Amino acid sequence: MKIHLLWKKEEIEERHINEDKIAVVFDVLLATSTIASCLAAGAREIIPVLNTTEALRTKEKLSAGTEEVLLAGETDGLPVEGFINPVPSILNRRASGKTVILSTTNGTVAIRKAASAKKVYTASLLNGEAVGKRIAGTHEGETVVAICSGSRNNFCMEDYYGAGYFIHCLMRETDDPELTDSARSAQLFYENMKEEAVSVLTRSSVGRMLSDYGFYEDVAYVSQRGIMDVVPRLNGAGTVLMDERDSASEHGPAETQRYHL
Image 1 (cartoon, one colour):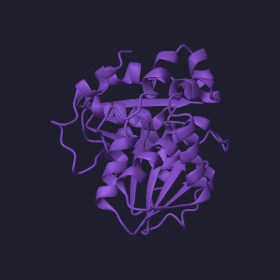
Image 2 (cartoon, one colour):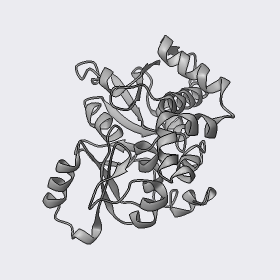
Image 3 (cartoon, helix red, strand yellow):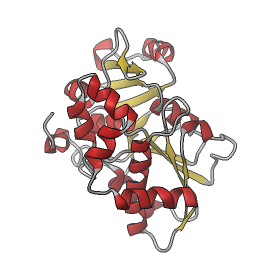
Image 4 (spheres, one colour):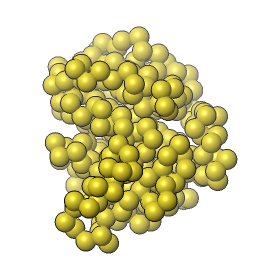
């Protein structure tokens, strides 16, 4: 197995993210953390969209009653009018049994850009260990590409840290994987800062912004490592679901109660 890392979503070249690649997308603050926590809280599915216009269009196309579909979205960290703020402390309480259409500035865009890979997983600190174990148990010859979403063409420290945690977990499950320098650097960054998760996230640019907006507790919540067994995967229809080896009995609302918001 070869493991590579992209520093930000703008580095994704769709012709290279192909059937030989397993993509793992990170937007620790907050899209991929929100996806993991929503599924753990009982959401039926997450539909990642490129922007709020597509979100509204997608909702119109769905045949399910509007009470079963939630619009959640932010732009530059601020909630969009008419959309639920996609932070776990708000969205988790409403997600059970619902389809969540999710629009974010960076993470959902990265997921969509990676869609041409053989498989696309989403990961965060909350579920990075579970995703690492699943990939190690089901893939051998492909290249695993950890994709840091970043923020508007800028590197984000929290995504790098989350990817490093995932790589650290994946390496424990595989025999002698080949790491590129970018992947190795993320692994080393995490291993040198592994007891500083809250500090890394709260001192990042996005973490400071969210804290200033009053969401410090959400930042602290998503800094927890490996507390959720959910393995979210993008399917061919563009919907993020539990990976087929997961079951609802394994992943319920109790998973979100290990840190109270």
